[in-house]
Image 1 (cartoon, rainbow, N blue to C red):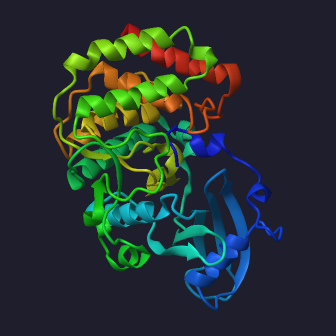
Image 2 (image 1 turned 180 degrees about the vertical axis):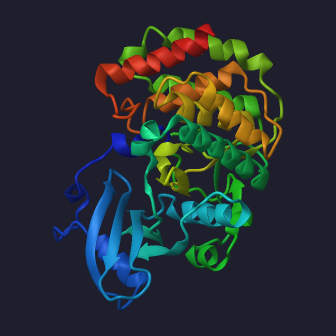
Length: 366
């Protein structure tokens, strides 16, 4: 998944757009299921998402054997599914973040696509449920996200900043055989796609400013009047950036839209693609934006809850305003250059642009 908070929703296409040459929209999925579950009878395949790069489906088996259902993701070979699977397995091994079990993965024979199969976790899409939760439950969920982020920061430390990938001979077999393949993940490791993210660097200020500037450059014409001020703000803040902050996992898309909820409790956190390593304070800024500001106007209770949850596990980092600015800017446009859709029900077009402009101005004027 490329950078951009609602990238999958912003880039949706019909399943048929990803069809095989023989016209079958599920040829790669069928082949993946044959590889992962040889001899199983598939009763139905339901598309959860069919985008420009990654397809996600739920397969239901009709033979009475376990598992009864499974989630299958396919993407072009070399697009990062192996790294995503390795990180998901490692997160499950090292933290209490609820992560669906990885059941299989590999390359789909004859299709030029990779696949990963995970358990089908119980629960509803938190993206659709978050605003409907009772205020106390919504605050509790926000606190959980703070705890999750702190746990991830405690579990994953890196040298350098930027894209994280698999290093060395970490093929699919190594990823699936090791219950915790996280030791094979490194900044500057084998990373199949860049997704518009700057290359790794040992210089934090260098990497962060390239990361933030790329977000400013990607903003469409509706932000032209703000662009000079944004660039000036980044230039002014460079001398004040920390020289060598700790480098921890930056799960840049940790948000309700990538979680499931059942009875008001988070049952699964999904989508660990395109991981980064960064100052933990940048991750905190991004999570606060996606949990506290994205869905509704926070009176401060959600942000307080995220921070309280984080403090349960680790000391709370101080967040410079320029990190909050980067978090908002990098969330405003998806990897295809399309303005992302905040709120739920989602808003788009001029309303989406107005939301992002308001959040940018709030940080600039704060």
